[in-house]
Length: 354
Image 1: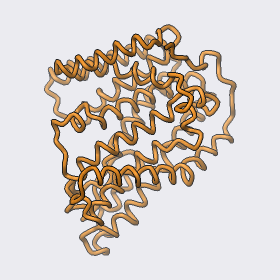
Image 2 (image 1 turned 120 degrees about the vertical axis):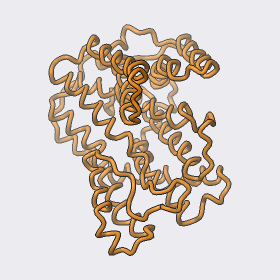
Image 3 (image 1 turned 180 degrees about the horizontal axis):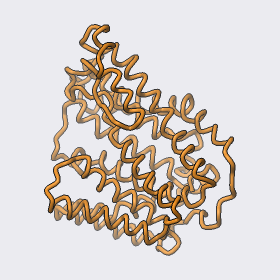
Image 4 (image 1 turned 90 degrees about the vertical axis):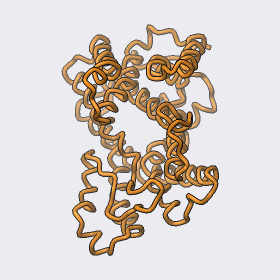
């Protein structure tokens, strides 16, 4: 489903781009200092979190397709590393060697001798550190160099969970439904009963719920009706959930279906959106430090928030385009050296009925 041969038949590239820009928009209010946690735009089910949930739904769907139709364990791991790792390496090194020295309040000798500076390299093994010594300490959102990185450990962990099921021959409808049920039970019931306060544990269950929903939708894709009527009903569920203060349940029930319905809705301009490249990951991974730099260097927190939002989107999209052409596409080109296998008939894309 994720190969270039299917891109002209779906809207995944557009949806990922849209989700990435939604994250940038959401971060803009926090980084500008204009955030309101109760705002519909910023809160738990604002545009940023919704975008992240859509990302994980799409990831679960496409990773399941890759696991079911891939050629080998080696190919699966290699392709994922080629997708994630090169841009992460560049983002990490730029933060340490460029952003840090240009913005730290510390003398450069003290900055480079600090264990926190070199501890930032732990991001390369997905043990996330968000700060560098003396960097962005006076910004409205202080001390955080790249807050977007928080999702990457969950991406890797959830990918590996599906990979383990595939490797053991247990990537079946039953096992994925069990995983989905465990994520829902843990997130909605167990954490509350045990009064678990860990944000990381909560995020694992929440993101895992959407990831396994995407995986389940892939495995059941040929049995489920993909209809505008169901999509409309799902939209009503979202509205009712917001009105009744039941957003967690409503979004979990409706958002995965809506995401994938939109991914296969026949809109030719959207299906052709990715012909110039997939800029979403570059936007996502480079936007946060660029937004912080705008505030640090140009006092952008004094700008009208919409002006800061527009500038943030412009530089983030530019970074995404540059990342794709300079880092990601060359790295992904190495996939041609991997063995190939013709996709099984079950890999053929679904088509939304409308």
